[in-house]
Image 1 (spheres, helix red, strand yellow):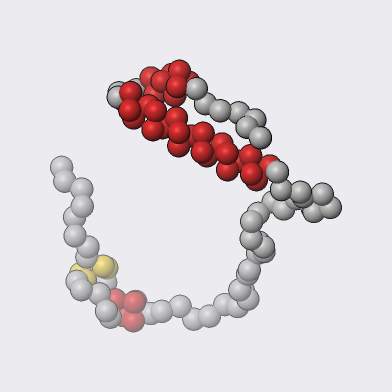
Image 2 (cartoon, helix red, strand yellow; image 1 turned 90 degrees about the vertical axis):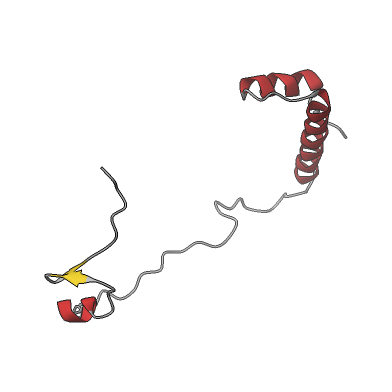
Length: 99
């Protein structure tokens, strides 16, 4: 049951829109791959899903929240204890933006 196939002219047109310069053999290769992909979609459409409710996500989704319990934050000295370089109570990091 072949509902749809992609012609070589359609592949050529899409390649032109994407500004791809493809050889004839590459165009034919893409045509075959795209038609195979459409065949997979046809297989999926053939699956009987009557009686099944649609799902918004492929996996179960739920919000997971931790308890909102205030705790004592790290002291400045504890936060800076494992830093490679500090100055005046601040982290020193390598410069990544040059002028």
